[in-house]
Image 1: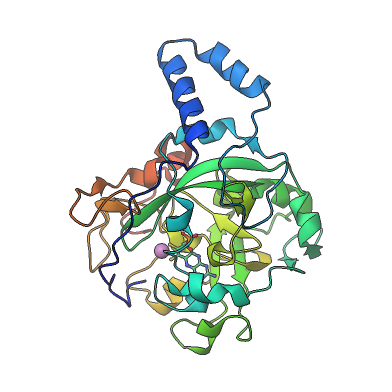
Image 2: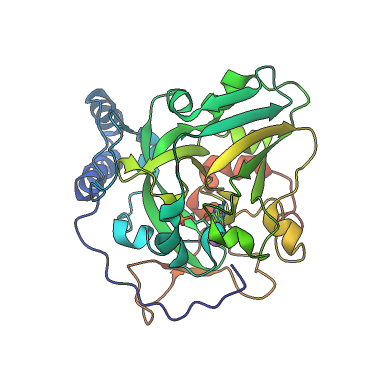
Length: 330
Ligand SMILES: Nc1nc2c(c(=O)[nH]1)N[C@H]1C(S)=C(S)[C@@H](COP(=O)(O)O)O[C@H]1N2
Ligand SMILES: [Mo]
């Protein structure tokens, strides 16, 4: 993340084809809401069993019967192009350059795959990926993801709230945090041979953050299975936190009683905290977090966008941090 400079990578202008229909639909809904016809519009929206329409290039299997989540209407922005979202990535297990994951992640075998449920739960044990995917109905949710380095994307993710899984495995009263452990296999992941981080990549959430409905356990994007470079076969998307909280290629979900170690905090504690909520008012020690560049839309000379508190999800998640000093708990 902080180790490499952006090499002046020039992003192509986003193509117009992405998620056009979905975007238009949502715009219509928003206009109806603004005009006061909210209830009726929302009912019509939900009633038509809206199927997700954002389309990938058809390289990977499409996920069937994915619903467009009404909650996804919160982000009405145009999705980043599939091309950009799959070629400009952070996934250090495949290298530290933004183009490394797209080049090397084809070595990853996302099937067969199991996720181990461990720790303070009444129903621990391994869950096979296919069973895991049937935990709840898949939804498409268009979320922004803001990297701590200053770039952001808008991606139509497919998955369901992590809370659906957590309820099924029944955490005990001692479960206060959830730790996510991701794959570290040097046979599939060349970057794991470098010492850039202490592998495996680990991340964590407080229990109420993990249970928040916005926290998505994701299996796909643009209507298709996740490409390897974006975290196949299963990753987290925590849209109000910096991107590194959204661990990719998860193999263990551990319920614990104490705040767990996380990779970036272990690596550079003076720069990365456990919470890592997107906050334009709290600078990274070496750079400002006040603005961001939307990948694919903003050329290098274009004006940056203002970064929003909690990445624009303040209304939904601000309450989780009521009374906390966000400068101290960054
Ligand atoms: N296992 C693992 N997960 C990871 C990372 C990583 O290096 N390894 N990088 C994180 C960072 S810094 C970001 S910004 C997001 C990027 O997700 P994307 O490539 O799908 O946009 O993944 C996060 N998840
Ligand atoms: Mo990131």
